[in-house]
Length: 367
Image 1 (cartoon, rainbow, N blue to C red):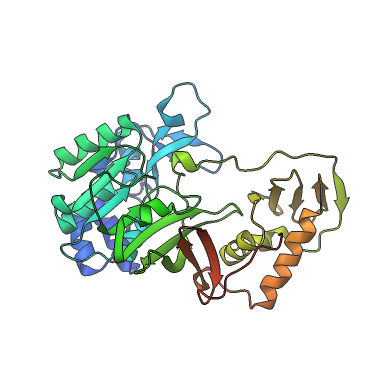
Image 2 (cartoon, rainbow, N blue to C red):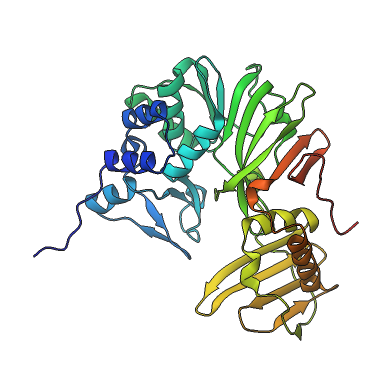
């Protein structure tokens, strides 16, 4: 008896998204009309925990494309002989559905997409709104050309531009919606000035303290943007927003007992709180057989690493682990809020994270 599983189909994928409540009836019709396979090139990779694995064979390609997984479409910015780091992809369909739902588009509204990628999201927007209302910008000229070809072959002709998505689209004027499909370290205020009052911006933020999170911002009459975080999101960063995972570490190691299981830090609500309280601190992790190991660094050269069931090691100036523990106890005191109780305000002076109300700004612990 054969134990082989049938290759999943795109209708199966759309049905699964609908079953999870991620598609309204209108968006379901849009997704059904735009097969993902039209926008995924033949040469792709699957993202694993520690590397990108080439996908070989038509059946394996179809299985990946018709699954709710990201599909890596470029390594090392297209340069040969690199370390094999993913630099462009076709995003998880469930994440695409979430972001398009948060965008709250209505008939007749103009949309700008930052990061054309394969062209799949632009095609979905064209199917929903019409070609003339969709604008998409891509920095990489090779990626942009492939997307333009795929869009044209599928019958869509949005306005496309090769350029820096961090800057407003020249001559475009105000738009109703803006969606970024690459992660931002911060929301550039120049982009907000392209969105009309009452408009909506949806983007993944690459927070330094471990997390990536979606934010949904609503533009106010005074040019301020305010809105909640809407769950986790892991996207490749905009190229101008790339940064090393950790800072350079200085000094010899000092051991001490851990007062906090490092696994407790890997909560999106805590990551948003700690990121606001400890600006300049970066934290990454990896799973271990016993639990997790985390590494934290500060821009002043201080650092700490901790693993489940082991001592903490600290380096350089200060006592970074004690600062992290203190912020954890603060987080406990305010009720261990989940991520969706946090929000973001962006003005021409910068951005601030708040808890439960825009007036309750979380201030840095370090002055």
